Image (tube, rainbow, N blue to C red; front, side, top):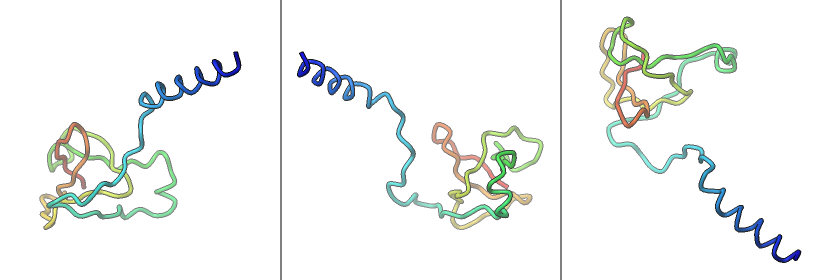
Length: 99
């Protein structure tokens, strides 16, 4: 009976594992982009209320597509438009802009 219980737990563990989301990981360079760190103070980077928005177009009035992490993939060479630079935000693989 004990062996059956151990085998059942092991099989259940194998079945549940794929359902758990994996953390993103770097698998290689992204052609045409380079990694850059946001210029935030130590206090800003630890404050959960500080968000750096990604906009859908290079203007403040455009909708926010998401928020940047501390490291951002920026188009290389950098092309600045109205204070915005093109960066990559992984939202269904779409390219967004970040200021």
